[in-house]
Image 1 (tube, rainbow, N blue to C red):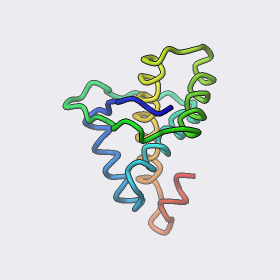
Image 2: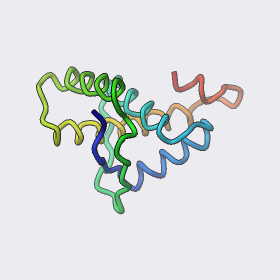
Image 3: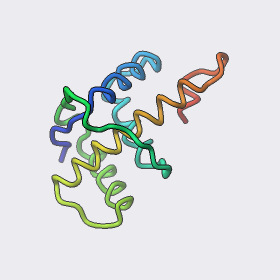
Image 4: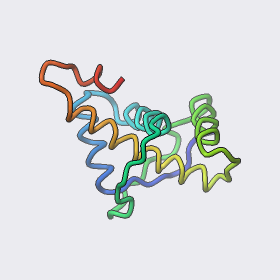
Length: 120
């Protein structure tokens, strides 16, 4: 089991690149962190998901046990069973949301804090 191709908006991709650089982490790890943060954040965030061009999140970044865990967290968050398409759309939404939450955390830190601690 692994993720299918998902899309990230242009703005989301730019924020993802900024996070990857500022946290000095690999992009797949930042995507997983954004997904987890997006699921765990209960506040609603308004963002434009339609900005183009879309960036395709490659297949198999999230696989095996990680995919199963995220799948159940998304289903639990939504409160209903989801089809594969709905699951991928929900994961894309939570990654978009998480990228924005993480970016806000990094941008609002004071100058002495390490970015990696702020995102926890």
